[in-house]
Image (cartoon, rainbow, N blue to C red; front, side, top):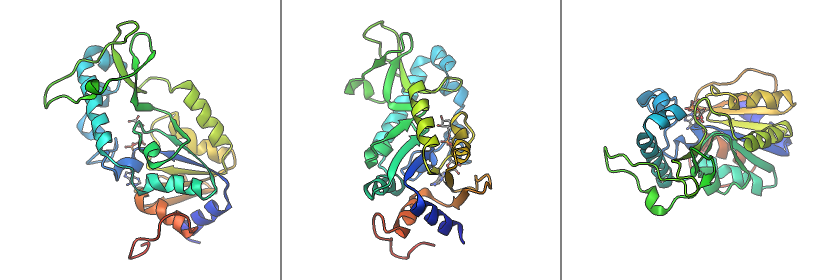
Length: 262
Ligand code: APR
């Protein structure tokens, strides 16, 4: 049986599905991943200089301007066929939830209602000093002119600097989000892991957690990231093609593009 056929059978037999997603699911929306050889953000920028509390302390304007730019980029992007396939499965009667490492809001804009953000969200800000969540005015969302840096706004309660509501390296994941993710993963019968390199812990441990809880795991990635476990299926290719094709095989979602599935 082909891997695609095994994946179709696993989805047909499932009721509770968790989509575990990484930067690869947003790549076809024009959002660069982190580690892809040519296009990954970390091939051009040093994450230590942009995604740590120490970097923010050292140069808050640089970090703030970097996130305003990323937020602007996400604002320009649209959910792609992979994002859109997920709520289609939910509308077709499966119990579907999303556990994502992504800080963009493309799952929500695609219509997914149950989305757990393990690494925070670009849409949130919080105070670097008192940690309370903040809100931004449209003016504060304006991106910097080329080469210009913008100082982070101040917390209305303690006048501390506002920082992006995302998880930086060497920071703990938001407790509530992690607890929700573990509960969903341990109670699902199918985990579909899409577009993640499986490098950054503790999130990268989620496929194994699902396998250990008796679920089947389907990996969708341009590269072979499978662990060759018995209840594991590797689908190698673009998420924007493979997820809709998987649903169509179960007559869920939009008709097949002309030329069929290669
Ligand atoms: N379809 C499927 N997979 C894809 C696609 C695509 N169109 N494009 C890229 N990929 C795959 C790549 O092969 C790679 O395995 O997506 C993966 C992206 O990996 P990373 O760039 O490492 O992103 P991710 O796994 O989400 O990173 C985890 O690291 O930098 C931190 O906090 C950041 O949440 C992020 C975490």
